[in-house]
Length: 260
Length: 288
Figure 1 (cartoon, helix red, strand yellow):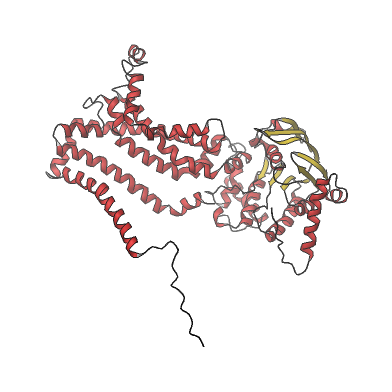
Figure 2: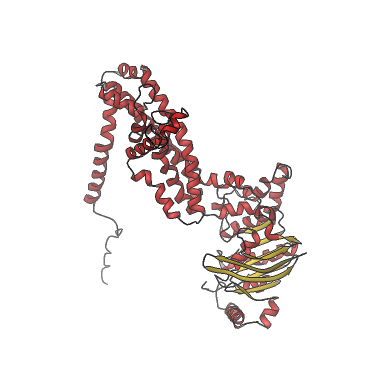
């Protein structure tokens, strides 16, 4: 009953995006894939979601050969970096999408779908915004709609691609806390891509530090802080510590300037 | 106390003098009036020069009616075909990477750069009686050249780029994200196309169809080569205009030409109306 990734490799024409990645995460874990851009973390996430195909390797989830399941049958709730909301549908229709496209036999009734949408709107704290269109929402609101849409299909796995990347620091902090609380409540296995060390260390049960298509180290945030396995990991975490100090200075504004 | 120094009048850096502005506007309006508006007015004026009755009489001629019917029929076949081809071409260019992609984009533009007459001639060379497939087609009693299939082929060739050209930039701009989201939420390929892709491109598609249709009904060169000018059988409206004109039947020629011009004007009015009516929705789909 867990996620087992075994030597997954992927190459884009010339560029090797993943050079054999392996890790194991228990059911219900919150895993962060942390690394600089180009380290392969998004590729790994997309492979888990079925949006990209691995050249080599194997993934087992819940005892199933996960890579042989087509994307649309995986029920992996994917949240995209740029949200990818359906721009011609209002919020309620966006959230209901995954239910509306089910074959008639398994599709809930109209009333049931409406009820579920209300429930999810409540969960993501967007009550009353069901009739709005995505371009009428703020970034943070769009992100929560994207999450609600992914949760509507009762996902077996939640895949988040830099979910807070496009948001400002304040909203990011709030959503972070909220997301962790949500995970504690739902217990859905969650894989979460980020290049923000603080975000990864603060949120995740396990952090996989990635660099150049490989996992340099995987462990609890405590382990990684205490015993970095390589100079790369140490460097990455150090930068995080430096940032934390900057934030702690009382005279500093709440949002430290960061170059990504 | 020193008097305050008057600031220079703020001017927009791209603002030009009143004279320059007036000159440009005049040139634009003058050009449009002389080269676009005047001929259009002449067409209608000539058609009505002997009264409305005589102009309408041109439409009583069975050959004219046959030409009008044929024009609509050709457009009704060619436009849906090009909608399907156009979406397929735009889809593959915008959403996938494959070798030879830029070559495909160039090919799509081919009908814009090749003279329509050449397109017609090519079809004659392939399907005509003396052409490559001529004997084969004759043995099976299939007529393509000097018949409806030839007219449709020529029209499809000439109007191919309209839908694809309209959709490629739109679909490229929108990217693959929404389709990927749909699939990850459990939608099938067809369902994704119908619920996500199509609604996102519907306005671009509509413009493409309108332009494609206008050109399909108005095409002369390519159609002229493959038609054979059989009155009452293979003459479309533009060809019929030529026939009448060469017969010195000016009123009739201009009456049919007026109908063609009217169809084009209706197309433009419909397009403008839709743009105005759905301005908000169009903006929402194009920007995020």
